Length: 196
Image 1 (cartoon, rainbow, N blue to C red):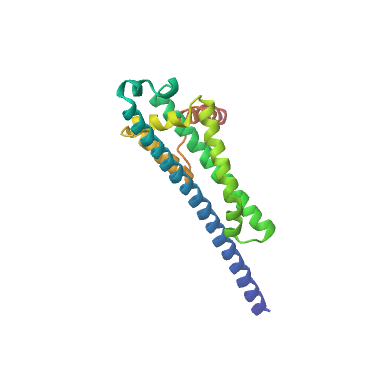
Image 2: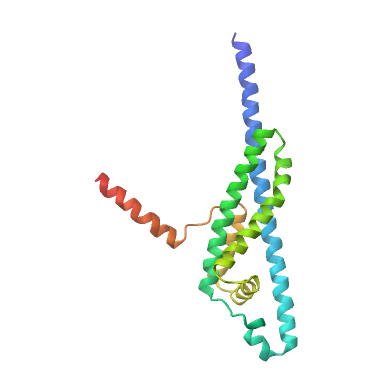
């Protein structure tokens, strides 16, 4: 009697290990897609900024000071706010996509790689939409974001915010923003007072 139970449980254990390995591969694949998206998007943005800088310097220094089409330079604080919000939104989208990949894999039995490939275009489109909406909410264009990043590229806080965004796109949770900490702080203190 002990023989079949042992064999059956080792098969079950192999199945669990296989599922765990597949889930890990799915997470890694989604994180890779997110990272690639950020790298490609950042490269495009930098290339545009360099082209604009070249054309602005060729047009004359006087016209380059005011910006193209009357657009204004955004503040460093606004840039940091947008980068923080983008990090949070990117991480949430990555987590949502991970869950979708695993659910579809479980429901259809398709390999994780196949599911990731199917959802990749939707993910990229959703990420572009999220980033666009955050910029729109702040009344900022992609061009203004690019100029602000170039202007503040040596600022340690901006560099850290960009690193946080890249890490969020790789599946690492961004640190809580000061606004999130303030929201959480009083709730914890209130609970502690009730207990004591």
